[in-house]
Amino acid sequence: MRPPMIRNNPMCTRINVTPIIDVALVLVIILLITAPMLTVADLDVDLPAAHSRDIEDQGYISLTVSKWGEIAVDEKIVPTVDSVREYLVARMNQDDQKDALVVVRADAGLPHALVRKVLEEARASGAARLAIATRQGGE
Picture (cartoon, rainbow, N blue to C red):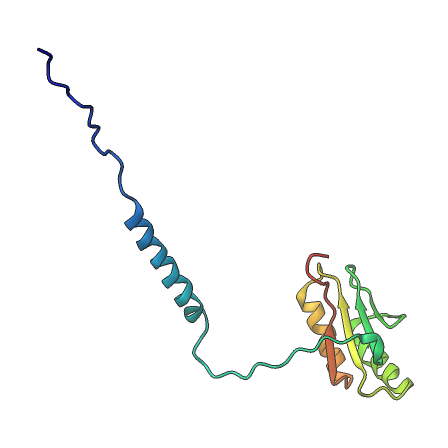
């Protein structure tokens, strides 16, 4: 007589991770839905519209500040920050450009106080429209 056959019945040793994955995905979806709501204050704000225009199509005055603090109005070098006002007034009166856009081109390494002073002088000269020139991202 033969001994009875014992079948190898391996026990299931794996953990079923399907319910854990389901719960994790539900939590991720809840997070994705609620996160944008948490980052914005609940205030009624009318945001201004931004327009991208070519400056070459309109009259503009370039106000350049180098990394060494040298200032120029268009191509004329300005001796000091305090004399920016008179150079801008003269330039705006030159071709009757009272409403000309003044584009401030300042080096990225300049102290913010100098850029602020240049902007204050430009505003004091009567420039109603000011813009700060920037690089496009990644350039």
